[in-house]
View 1 (cartoon, helix red, strand yellow):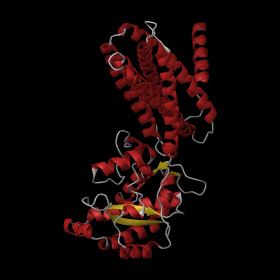
View 2 (cartoon, one colour; view 1 turned 135 degrees about the horizontal axis):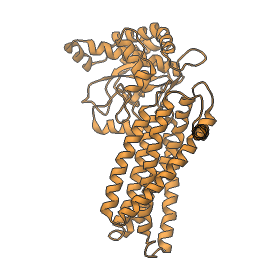
View 3 (cartoon, helix red, strand yellow; view 1 turned 90 degrees about the horizontal axis):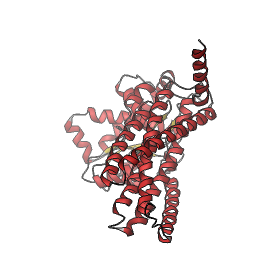
View 4 (spheres, helix red, strand yellow; view 1 turned 60 degrees about the vertical axis):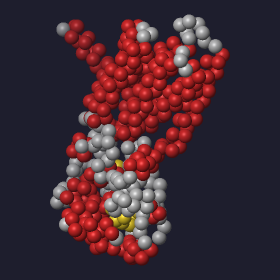
Amino acid sequence: KGVAGRVRALARSVQMSFLPRGVSEDYYAFTLWRIAQRIVSSTVSVFGTQSLLLALGVKTHKVGAAAASGWVVANAIGKFSKMSFAAGWGRDFDSDAKRWRFRAALMWVFANGMEILVYVVHNSAPRSFVFLVALSVSLKQISILTSSATRGTFYKQFAGQNENLGDITAKGDAQVAIADLAGMVVGIQLARMAGSTPLYIWGAWLLLSAADFLCILRSLDTIVFKFLNLERCSVVAHHYVRGGGAVLPPSEVSAGEPILSRPEHATKQGNFATGWYYDVVRGYWAATFRKLSETTVTPPELRKLLGLFANGQYMLLHTRHPKCPEAPPRPCVVLRQSATEDDVFQAMLALEHLKRDIEALPAEERRSLDSEMAGALPLIKSARDYAQAKVGDIVQGISEAGWTCKSSGRPKLMVGYIRHRAIW
């Protein structure tokens, strides 16, 4: 009985030290997979560090001033890359935290791969040292930045209405410290077994990287965000329009939320080069929310559209992209400069209604819409009217389904940074 009591006391002490109170249900599964991922990630890092030391000549006492200066240059490049990355993509971390967290893990794994490559090629291509180390340091700096930036979004979700963000953050850092120490111990033992044989080092890196990806994906799959972003908003609007006014709860939306692929309802481009540019450089939603110069709307058509949306904060279009004239026209949105998150939400509802009506047309009528936008104007007007009439109902349904709403009762929509807007 005395031993059992001491075990229970120890368990309570561990729980108080490493597990916060008042967290959402998805916290514990996330924490389990996160600890596993950190152990694997720290193990991989040992191999990367060992390879860099071998390449520098630590084992044979060949470290010189040239290697040291090269290391300083590589670190300076890494700091500059981190600064540039934060300036270019920092506004998108909150609205797409899961994908950015996965990308951070991906960058960390590839950074360790670059460190191993330094050792493999240091004799045959010694001049590649600075380039490979700079690439590795840059990826690690960006990965650390991205992980830190997205961590707050996850912790806010776990805290919910309890506002115990400090407790969750402190316990999370303690968990990471323990996992990192465990990973270092495992990594040192595996590194001793692998020795300095490149084949063994690469094999360990591949296996551990696969385990790292599995753990990070499983940890992210456990998180159920209760606030809307553009992707979750599009899913809710899509099912509302096609499902007779039903609003999906956060758990169902999260279960179908892809991490490895683009959002299902984000507008695609027909041209691979243009599509790659939009997805990678400007974001998945850049082709959905366009500027007028990225459409083929003629002045007469624009005048008719302005007649429909003169007092609105958005404009619906069915148009091609000027750089992809061979691709069929697609529905998209042009936001007014003064448009708010609530206006974006209503625009998404109208956009999904327009998509549904176009998809429901017979093939011959749909082909007629490809030649000119005038035929789509009645459908655009219908979508606008539908969104105006139904926005109150869907807002109420969103609140009842368990989504986070603002004090005004409107859904909390995190849209990120939509770069291009128009003035009319």
